Length: 263
Image (cartoon, rainbow, N blue to C red; front, top):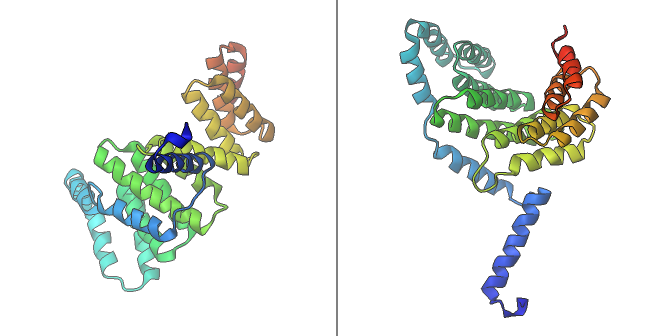
């Protein structure tokens, strides 16, 4: 039967097989130059900008914007990066305090650009993730998602052992899946689990996702495995309370629920 296919059809089949292998095993064959080009293209097509977000926030804040304005003027008057960093930190903190995590993430990203340290990029990425989760407007959600992915990928490239950033990167794709690869986040978490089978944070996230999709047996398996490694992990205990409740085991659910809310 295969011999009856045209040369073009055979090529299409081969391409499909290669694509499946890339998605399933997580192979990364995209050159760094192409990745950077894709990132630039992604950011150039954003539906909004930090300037637009600040303009909207300024109208909403009214007189409260005075502190931000003073800090911005102070920042513009500084010449040295070491001095700018402290003001950027204050601006990021103030925007977060005022309830604008997307703008807070922007200033955290500016700090990361200056230091180019993994931890700084991780903070920027995490802040953008929170902005994405709390966004009520689609344009802000998408803007924050794009920035979160870029920041977390940079953090991981600088420190491949940063499990926390790799988890957050996977969760970003899970919470906001792309149309061309909706399973990307799940596959990233599974790969993390294969590389770090005793990492409780990875096991807990896999257990939580199994709960969300009503795969209760799988959730209990992951969470009990995590509990065996860290018996006092509060996050795991609380997730186990939910898992046993969904499994219909009211006695165990009550036991874990009590532990969950214990001081």
